[in-house]
Length: 170
Image 1 (cartoon, one colour):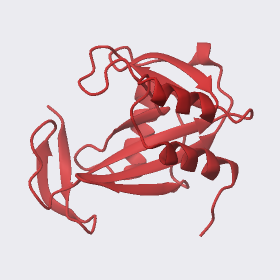
Image 2: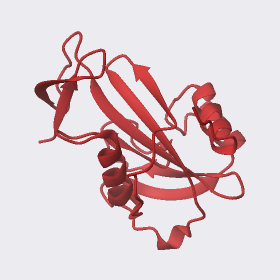
Image 3: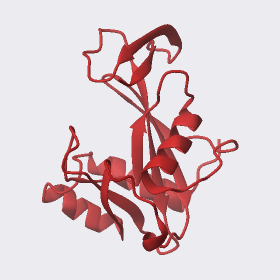
């Protein structure tokens, strides 16, 4: 049973938790993270979700994604998910989310890393990840059109690639 911290609309922990899969109450939010890995050829590492996954089974997705567990910060959740799903150990101590998307039930912190990883050296989490590959943004757009990719707005995918190629420092 996975427990999540419940946040208010200002992204402050309420001190309450909820069980994954249960209905969120109005005004309650949770935290998720995504990590996009972009290589030196401008390709994103994408993963195919296991066929047994509840949401978007068998669809291709951004490099890594998952929910922050009870007591975890965004950075801790991102570091854990990256290690669990792909076997990559990166330090998030000095890393900030590139941007955050507010969605109906929470906050989605998106981290972007540059790296050239050999796919054969990755350690895929068997119950989560079916396959991985490197693709350009136009291929992801085509995959969205063919219903092979999680149905993100195309502007979201473009924003990830644009941010990766031109880091924003505020």
